[in-house]
Amino acid sequence: MNHPSRPAALLLMLLLLPAAASASPADAERVEKAYQLSLDKWALEVRAATTTDARTKALSARPDPAAAAKQMWAVISPDLREAWSVEPTAWFLGISAGLRTTQPNGSSSRTFTEEINAVYAAIENYHLKNPKLPPVCLALAASEDPRSLTLLEKIQTAHADPKVQGVAALAIAMRLKFLGDEPALKSKRLTLLRKAIIDSAEVEINGTSVAKLAEEELYIIRFLSKGQVAPDLQGNDSGPRPMKLSDSAGKVVVLLFWNSGIQEAARVLQMASAMEKKFAGKPFAVIGVNNDTTANLREWQKTPDFVTFPNFSDPQNLLAHEYRIGTWPLAYVLDGTRKIHYAGPPGSFVEIAAAALLDDAKPAAK
Image (cartoon, rainbow, N blue to C red; front, side, top):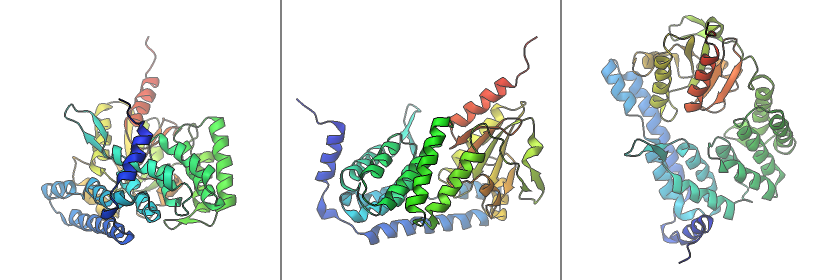
């Protein structure tokens, strides 16, 4: 018996989605607004908690992004072929990115694998020429899915509108920066950014122009690539007491840009704390840069199970701007001279890069 190929099976699934269950853009907007309101309410509850136990309980009650993603999927899945679904699809890609489900054997897998497969198939088969693709392009740029780069290249090639082509070029350049800093990749990124500026400078996505986003990417290539000496940061903690990144000279530093609104904030912080414990006694430090209000950061730091490392308080994003942070959370791994060895999402690569630097710093055996 012959079975359909995977792409064909996904296309067949899309064709069989029931039209009778159609929703509307208003339904998608309600899901987005409800989730944002729940996040705002949760942030207030965290700030209102006055004891460690109450704060721990409040932090653990963060609105579930997976539940919000499921609600959005219920809205858009019957209409993935329809043009209106493209914009809420971008929101779905953004909120579902990075979500993982732990299996009984302890391994983990992406929570929305089949759904994201269906989204990719829908974009490729129905929406490569949709004029509302720019938000999807940026959602794909932030994705760790290796297929995102291929899909962006197809959008850039297939779309008739130079403005959308330019946004796709910007997204490809943004995606490529996580693949390395080799000269050939840098050259390709510069070519793509030039196209983005020429074709799409005035296009705005989520309130920010392509020209501004491209300018930030050019700065990253010039000053924040692997091998460059990272900017020194000077500011205050939540005390407020003065802090300087250069005070950690001679140490391997994981510089973590985070806030309480990021998905799985507790998991990211616990990962950072685990690295502190693992590398205790070595020339190593985790230093956070947090853009919550100073009062909110202070509340988080009263819960030692979550925040065990010093943090710059950066509510106005002045320090984050020095590192051109566009995607949260983001981690930099710096050696003892502040030279950049890794920049990207927090995860196993951060620990691997830090461990390698610490091994290199060991004194030679006599």
